[in-house]
Image (cartoon, rainbow, N blue to C red):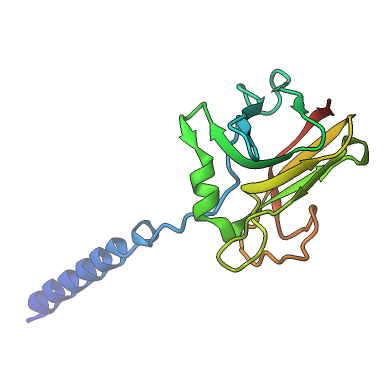
Length: 187
């Protein structure tokens, strides 16, 4: 009888050990973090309103942060014109178009445009996300008279969501995916 109890106890201990190891943390669902994007190329696609004229300007950092300096086109626009502009983000190292991800996760992203006062470029008409907060993949650029200046473009990532229209460019609840500055001229 003692041997039978000992045998059953051994089986019970083995069953408990098997149960606890099969329910280890390895079987817990993996929660993916909504991390910042890897962006090596940013392209601005300009379509001059009322014409078929199209222009593309890009920023390329092929080796990523910390390596060689990025190659940046100068934005050259005509005075007194209006352009429909779309933005694309690429990770050319991994062959990915990040624009689609930014669009799909629109409530977690926002693009800020900061033209210098001397640029004579006004940027309006930024598209919105599903919650009617600025996204900025599409915009309208209007030029006035001849000038030179800069246009800063910043893609911010709101990993925890909660993006509001009043958020400033450096809001602590977001982080920077890319922060670039193009030189510009209107001539």
